Every structure is written in C-alpha cells, then in structure tokens.
Image 1: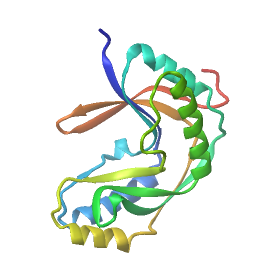
Image 2: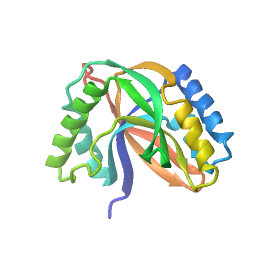
Image 3: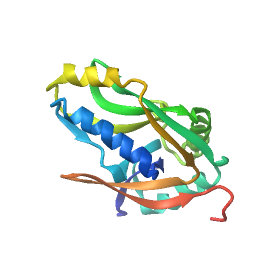
Image 4: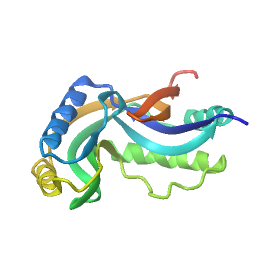
Length: 191
C-alpha cells in the first residue's frame, strides 16, 4: 500500500517585508487575548487547491497538471483582513488579495480542469483567494478580536511577484503543520 501524502497547490509568500507586516498584525490579534493558533511565518501562502491525501504515484500526475497551467509571472497585492465563515463568528482570520485575483482565478480554473480529469472531485468551497494568518480555537475574547479585525479591514501588507507554483506536502504534528515542497513549476522553464 502506498503512503498517503496530505497535499495542496500554492504560491508561497517568500517576501520578508510582507511576512513582517503579517506577523505585526498577528501580534495585534494575539494581544486581544483570543484563543488563536497563528500561522507560522514559513507557512504563509496562498492555497490554490487543497488535494487531501494523494499517493506518491499521484504526485507526478498532479505535477503534469501543474506544468500545463498557462500563466506569466504576475503581481499579487495583499490588502485587507477578514474572517471565515463570518466576521462576527470567526474561525479563520485571513489577509485578502487586492490585485492578482483574475490571474489566480485563471490558474485555479486550469488546475481544476486537469485535476478533475485525474479523478479529483470538484473543489466544494469554490475559490476565494486569501492568506490564512490565524485560526480561532474558541470564543474567548471574540468581541475584542472582531473589533481589531474591523479596525484593520483595509490594512496593506505589500505586493510580490507570483511566479512559482508549488505542490506542497502538509505533515500534521502536535505543534502544527510542517510544509515541504514536493514539486515546483515556473512557466517558461523546462521542467
């Protein structure tokens, strides 16, 4: 039996200035006293498609789908914060994508087409480009947390060039997930 690899396709956020600004906002959230699990700086990314458990054999097939995605490097501007499922009952706190949404949507649609042909079910939640920055573990200090999210609704984190699509492994541990890159694709380079 083949090993199950929990995986997703994403653009990593490698820009240190953006990471620093996100961490600064995470500190504001933490000071509310809310029960949060902050996303580690090395784990900050934009998920294009969560795949769940795949086999080692499937890794190369998913990579083939990635290599067929047509895109040129483009700018993503990260601005604004909000929460899923609703601002007044947050379970996930996110930073928004202000610029680059059309390109991200095109990449998602191309991935979705290829993945469906491999037998993956359609993405049940659709695609809403965002960067998860914290998970809310309980209702403790919820009103203060919501207040800080609302006060920073239009906060700017910066821009970066998205040029490297990555297939990531997510290994769940008691201290949180550990992400590693299984495959990466830059358009214009021979894979």
